[in-house]
Image 1 (cartoon, helix red, strand yellow):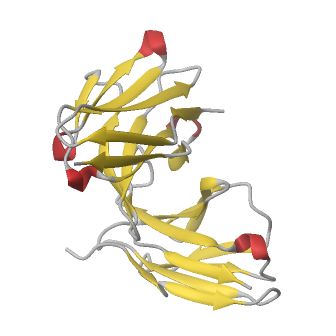
Image 2: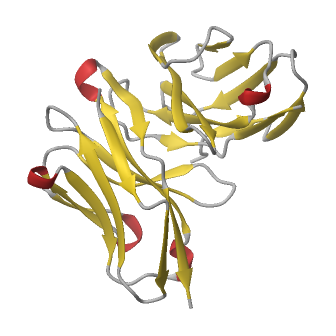
Length: 116
Length: 114
């Protein structure tokens, strides 16, 4: 079964600093990978997705992620954090290979705190 | 374009009762998925419906059920509620059946079981 592991349940950065949220996947074949963000009392919003095209994926709000097969990683980065980035971030993998394209397996989430 | 709408947003039930949650997908979206979010278990897939047919089901007991109507609106039902069913239930819609996981989520229905 496909799975993702998010390292660090809480990450704190200063405003203007680099944001790095880690995600490693476990899959026997190239997966479809996603990053979603959840703001307080809201649903999830898609930040970006990797579907075996370009390995560097750009998303909304200045976020990007790089798919590294050799490291089985899909880390999320943003060069300069903003206060509005404070939220919970989820890495997810799609079950596309077994016909469940809309069935996602989520990581445990990383709470990002941005400090002045 | 209206987003995914879930009702009710908050509800409180007691053990043994049953509950029905509703989800209206984005106009034109035919796939509706349901997820349960709890602090302990995180986000877990419940089931997915496409054109009124259940396409996928997660590892939940039979007390959890759902259906989809011809207008793509979906409901999920939980019978004989247990304390552990307290959670945020998220509905997500997608235009296609295999849209590679690009889902649009509603704000959720927060269920508290006392």
